[in-house]
Length: 387
Ligand code: PLP
Image 1 (cartoon, rainbow, N blue to C red):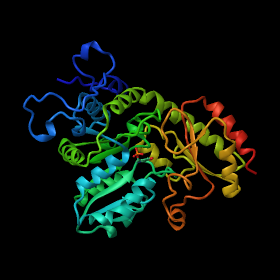
Image 2 (cartoon, helix red, strand yellow):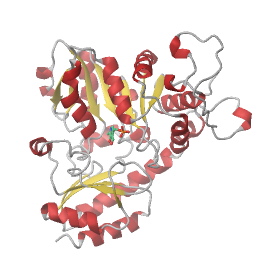
Image 3 (cartoon, rainbow, N blue to C red):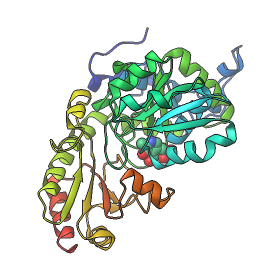
Image 4 (spheres, rainbow, N blue to C red):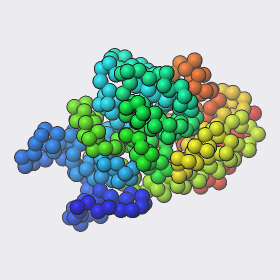
């Protein structure tokens, strides 16, 4: 019987590890074998084959992730978008309607707004802040509601409790992208969400060296998603499984440090004369600070801010930073900075960006695990050239 572990730190290290250890190996070996000897497995989904997501590397990760977020089961996928698209294609069928929070990650927003119609799916965006307005968007064919735990890049926190209640009252599945918070700061299933999704590329792996995704939830739901994933083919390669498995073990250490460092950086920026506005839910001035305190154990490592002086000033800041690397993506050990207008949200039109409040002078920081003071000094010198 699989051992159970009480605290998250212990689960990160021990949950899902093979028992007994394979040849005594302390670290999970890589099973780089496309196929495995047949011992009469049935049905098809149980044949052991990498695409069917059931090699020892997949199984160990599934158990670890399920334990971390207290789900019955989990599934890893080839990318965060594979987790998101496969989940949509499982819980929605042609003719169905989705309610999705506005201000989602650009790739998800694009997938819903540009690709859904060619599969006979429809959608409406809802304001995560205004539960009273959701009912009027509901249709007889609405099947699910989709939100993010923290939105990108403005770090907004929807009324997550209301999302779960609304879904229950209206017989919808509640889905949440938990990438930005990670299981260290938020465990959606404990709050009643049906499915928690991740771009494991980010905090779960934490080292900016793979793309991966994950879905966690009830066994019956995960089984359906796994079946669909097996057909769509978005399985994670065993070597990437190994890297994710290794990265995940330090998740709590990394994320707790990033929580603290990001808060100090947000406070520094908030007091800086060259900065117009800081978006970080750990600041008491953030409109969703109370919600963040209620739901989250930490506000995470993402901070965004608007520099005074418009686009040119933002560009000068970006060019002047020496420690932070100018790159999209997030959640790794190295600090990254980006202008969402040119990267994550470049697929949106100007009116769409304006409606979401994503300005030309907005800069997003993914705080890594460098010394906080070194980062603050680097940002300070970069800000000195913006005006
Ligand atoms: N969800 C969020 C919140 C993201 O930020 C991203 C990527 O940046 C994704 C999903 C997609 O993940 P991936 O790039 O692993 O496919």
